[in-house]
Amino acid sequence: MRLMNLYRKRSLRQKLILSSILCLVIPTIITLILSDYTSKKVLKEEAVRTASETLEVIEQYIENRINKMIYVSNFIQFDNEIRSIVMQRRNEHRLNLEPDEIELFESRKKITAKLDNISFPDEKTYITILLPDGTNYTNYPYYEFDPVGLFEEPWFVELPDFPASSTLWVGTHPAYIESERKQNEQFMTLVRTIKTFSSELYGYIIISISESQISRVFSNDRAEGEKLLLTGSGIILSHADKSQIGQPFAHSQALPEGESSSSQFIHLNGEQYLVVANKTTYSDWYLLSMTPYDTALGQIHQILRTNVFLQIMFFSAFLIILVYLVRQFTKPIVRLGQIASEVESGNLDVRSRIRGPDEIGRLGRSFDQMLGRIQHMIEQITLEQTLKRKAELKMLQAQINPHFLFNILNSIRMKIWLKGDEENAALISSLAKLLRMTISQKDELVPLQEEVDTTVNYMKLMNFRHHGALKWEINLLEETLDEKVPRFFMQPLIENAIIHGFNQQKGTIRIYSRIAADELAIRIEDDGAGMNTERLNRLKENLKQPIHPGWQEDESFSGIGVKNVYDRLRLIYGNRFNIEIESMPGQGTQITLYIPRAKEE
Image 1 (cartoon, helix red, strand yellow):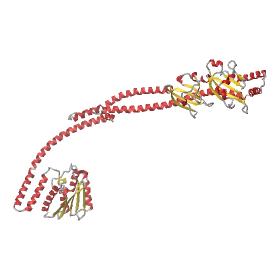
Image 2 (image 1 turned 90 degrees about the vertical axis):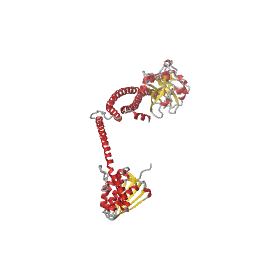
Image 3 (image 1 turned 120 degrees about the vertical axis):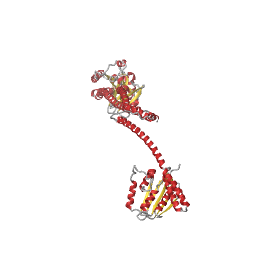
Image 4 (image 1 turned 45 degrees about the vertical axis):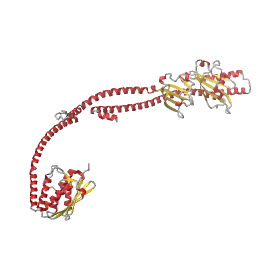
């Protein structure tokens, strides 16, 4: 509300500038917000898609390594010669038979050769076939590691009851090969059992690769994000940072639950990351990509900053141009305001001199013309007032004759009355009273009683003229006597009844009054000739015709008629005044006037 009040108090020029700035700033801000939201959404989807594609490539590489390990285990599991040698050695041990050294050497030589053949030279794979009695076959020398030591590993206790058709992924653990241990390597190991169809255990297959073969596909550049391999419980299996291997992932809630993939933003060490996680197909492991928010959305920030900078530059340039143009456009209006202030102070000689083909030019020209006309009208009114004062003086002088006549009539009335002719004295008294009412101009409205008295005096004179043919009955309610009514509104109606209703013959006029709500109802009726329906309708239509602008009330008693009475009362009371006329041939005419009552102050 306060801002609106301040806005209303500003000048038109300031309002135009403020409105233009608001119309520019608000859409710009909305556009920037929507653009920022849409761009971030699109870029996030693109970042998620890119991260997912990267994880798919990494997963294919890891899956290739895992498949090679599974291939080796399947080869050993289903190779008849290896299986036969293992089962024979197991049976000899169960029967406590001493093995033939030559035969044992030959069998070890055959299996080692097979293990060397299925190993991939470019990717070091450590293969161990370990029997329950400690007999073992490997593709690595014993000085690197004695396979019997595998019995001491914590995960080995699960193997005896493990199905031969299943694979146990041990995960990441310290390397047991001496050369690898010296390089602080970690192993990822696959273990399977060799069993008969009756689930009798004959041996174990242990295949290990170094964790570096997995993590070398993970980027070491933190700006490009981190890639890591996790177990389903959130333990890090492989990472470019060796110190994090075997540690629990701080945001394991980012792993998808019941879904193959997910993406979300998380906060880590005060920084926001985009995390994309995909579940692997070969285990309950997860490949996870963590990209810093600034890296993922840094491009859009740069675009937005550039966009905001350009918007500010364009806005500043537009604002300068806008202020200049608004000042030029509103300069004529300011000029008109100054001229209007001078006119208000009384100086009508000033002119704006504003011209042009546009609306402001036309307004300036019209304003100057209006000032010229006002000045001319003032001069004309001044002249008319001078002439009016002269006319009023002449009118005052002209009233001497009616007053003189009124005084002479009173003198004649007194002389006749002194001679005993009371009838003619009363007649002259009525004429004198009527004459006095005509020359009195002090009040437009008079009490109803005074108006009726004037009407009675008029009917007495008319009765004298028509030799006593006119009769009248006055029935006024007492509460209506002081009600204010216009002067001389009854006389034209009485005259109309005498001339047209009675045709100057005998007749009776009745006058009634009553209070109807906030109106004074006055009914004037006669028992004259009346009117047929056609003539009555024509009279009513004539009453509805607009008032002639040059009409003035006649100063005489004749020729005014119902129309002029109706128009006069309409001018005084407006639409609040109403009239009802009823008439039938041979039954006279009844006119009811509804005059609004004056409100008490």
